[in-house]
Amino acid sequence: MPSRAAFSPSLALLLSLVLALAGLLGLDVAPLRAEFQGVDYTLTNQNGQDFSGQNLSQTSFAGAQGRGAHFAGADLHGAILTQAAFPNADFRGADLSDVLMDKVDFSGADFSNAVLRGVIAAGSSFQGATVTGADFSEALLDRADQRALCREASGINPTTGVETRLSLDCA
Image (tube, rainbow, N blue to C red; front, top):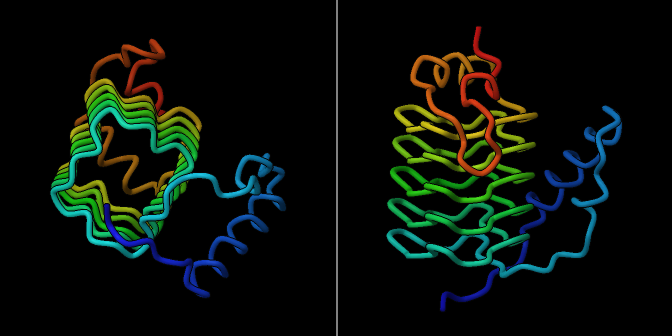
């Protein structure tokens, strides 16, 4: 098991700002204010690690490196992935609902059949990501990412029954 790392002051400030902004926008931030309960992988190297099928709900991967990591079928509900890098990672069928994933490199990642409902992914890169059958309902994405994902989006999420293109608000 990797060593545990503490939250950096800059990450704590960022999370405070996100919570304040969400509160001003009238978003329900109660789940974000809950006491941290998951494992802390903040600022660790998780390249190639296998987390498939694991319960990682409310776990922090903030600032972590996860090139080619495997999260297929994992429960990451409410996790923190902010300012991390997960290029070519496998998130097939994972539950990423309500995840804070701003400023994350997801280039080439596979989100097939994943649930990404309510994610905050501003400033993230999904270049070359696979989103077949993914559900992005109520997700906060940059407009450019949303448009790029719409060019490749197809399928229906097997868990939620939501069409990927509809969840991305594709025209």
